[in-house]
Image (cartoon, rainbow, N blue to C red; front, top):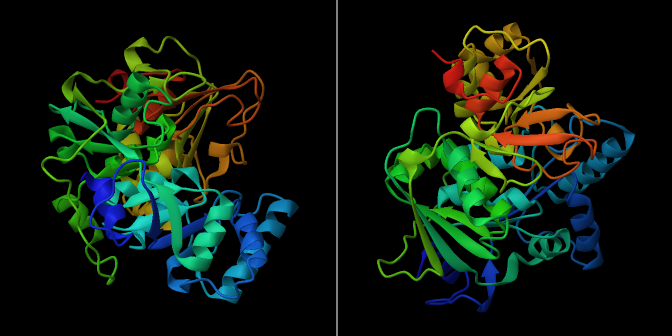
Length: 418
């Protein structure tokens, strides 16, 4: 069996599972947020169940429209907050919360070998920890909150092997944009994407989180990495809960295998309006920008801010655009503050926000007007994703974002970095 099959078999009481098989799966963590929790809570109430299956395994993080941007979002968050307090589930309020997919690994809530379901498509982020994590609809999440189980079809697996050594300024965002550019937004439809190879072994945990996060942008059910010393070092001390490390068999079956030379991949940019419209930054063209966003559940971790800060140096934000930096959690914000990165951004002319999803989904904190162009480290660039349907969103990693912030156009970090 491959890694996903190993985890699903262990959580369904079976010695083995096969692609296409329907199984009942025990879950370790059930997640929702301020947008998706209300529907899940209403459906939970309709089930007639008084208490969630395990309050310590149900997690609610208000992060999309918080701090509340208007009265409707305030009412929605209050509804969620009241339920969380009544049930005693794991809940993070503004000030302790952050972007959910950055927060949960940081807090040790997700561990290797877990099955995690969340009412958010980017729940697949936790596959970086060698967990099987996937997004589901709010009604399915209601059932998971009540029973601690889900039913699902076992996905086929596709293996992606990255050989060679990464070029300077190339990170997880570039590898996943390259991958999606090669296979398309439906290239891994209802499949588990399993990442491996020498370049993956060298990739940091933050880089792996970024890659797993965007597996959904290729249509995948999950994106997974086999646990190694970096994984175990990351989770060390974050939780006292026991976990199991699963590894794919030497003769594991895969529907398809892709192999690429990572040393030939340069920093990538996805042009509007699909993540699959990816190309090397050297072929992105001369695109003048109105806004740059650095943050989100994809690239809002400390390594991302360090890379952006290193590229920017002591340079100023180009006078023709605005730059919004959003650390993924308060802990990331504090670390960046202690390292002088936040000061560097502010002195450069950027604005630094509290931890929130904000502009990524067109919520607030950076909505685009008609005709405006934004380069963002977020995960989607669909039409109207960040505001007006007549605006354009370009996706890239933090190095390209920082270079573009300095030059006012899409730029390679090699153009500005010392």
